[in-house]
Amino acid sequence: MEQELYKKILIATDGSANTRRAVKYGIELARVAGADVCAVYVLDTSVFASMPMDAAWESMYELLRVEGNEALKYVEDKGEQSGILVKGVVLDGHPAHEIVDYANENEIDLIVMGTLGKTGLDRILLGSVASTVAHTSTIPVMIIRGTGDEGAAD
Image (tube, rainbow, N blue to C red; front, side):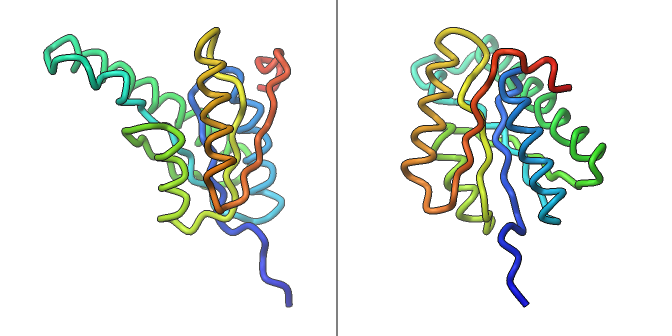
């Protein structure tokens, strides 16, 4: 009997409408393959590196953490609709490195992620994250392009 190709799939999300298509593909692939899903949101702490630790920093950090939890809840809800249990985790650090490290440490068989972020510069940055993950991961990476009408994917 052949060994299953995908037992654990990591879906990376930034919570944007543009990553919803990647979530949809990742959940459907997990359903077909009978795989478990880990959803990962990386709180990019590099943007805070030059800022002094104060109440404003902590307040912004908490807002981003709440955004991360909402992004993971979206993936969990989509998984539940398809009968897939999703384990969500918020990580801190550089997104590409955290995604690759988490995948390696948790025996992930496939990383699924989108190319586009929220708007403007975020799109370039997430594209850069996807590119970095694809070039540095020894685990297969499936990159799902956004189409511009991701709201219709719901």
